[in-house]
Amino acid sequence: MTNGNLRECLDDLNRKPMDWATRVGVALGAARGLEYLHEAAAPRILHQDIKSTNILLDDRFRARITDLGMAKCLMNDGVASCSSSPARMLGTFGYFAPEYAIIGKASLKSDVFSFGVVVLELITGRQPVHKRGGAGAGGAGTDESLVMWATSRLRDSRLVVAELPDPALKGAFPPEEMQIMAHLARECLQWDPEARPTMTEVVQILSTIAPLADKRRRHHLPAAAGAFAPGFHAERPRECSVWQDDDDYGHRRDHLHGGYGSNAKGAVLSGEVTVNVGMPVTMMTTMGRSWRSAEQEEVDLTEPRLETFTEPTTTASPFR
Image (cartoon, rainbow, N blue to C red; front, side, top):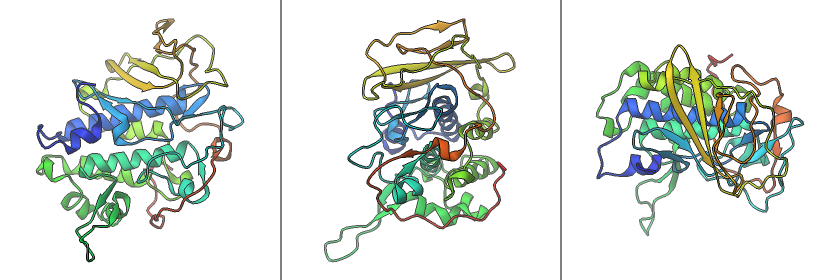
């Protein structure tokens, strides 16, 4: 991709810093891609490795989610259609949801937690895990989680504006939009999976502050029935491009890059959806919460690891 991945754009000191409007647009584009995986694909897809290096940016900084090599399909009964017994913990340290790190269970809300970390990266410019200043005889620093560093600041509206923003922004952002982004990050990072918003709700919130060009959505629901084959292999390369349309908002295009089938090719289903895969995709729902319970969505994963997390916040969620 022309502009590489999101993490590279945030770290590269040799390029112009990403401005606030671009960051909001990237967050919205990535949220729409993840919303598609969670709500539109049939069976729905748990990405399981959402992170800034897996969000690619084109020449206009439009976001595409990539690397579905760890993805799981969620069937109607909530059971993964592919192997659910990995020999190691899947995902990337710094993005693990607490329920996955502690008991080894992942759900769609685990992806939401990881997306919350990405939102924090967009706000702060910091990496998900970074070194603190040198300590000890050898001068080696200690790893500090971005989530841990940001938690107390997310709870204080004054610190949200004073300490959270990336210094590269140089204060060039609307304070009210920063507050909304910070609040969204906090909601996505809730300890309780059920307290986190769905990706559809995340898209709705981001749409309220997105630049005009990024508010243009295309809602194309496929007329053809079908679903991914139950036994697909996630490690196979594919590219999936999602078109959305809405008469009130004009035209826009969102993309997903991932891995499901070597015979990938583009197709237009009744002029409603374009998906570059070898199998048809059926839209299940686009708005509101899924009718499935959290228990049905969970995928049991082996070898839990423990990562330090904060206590759950008590602030009432606007998504309830």
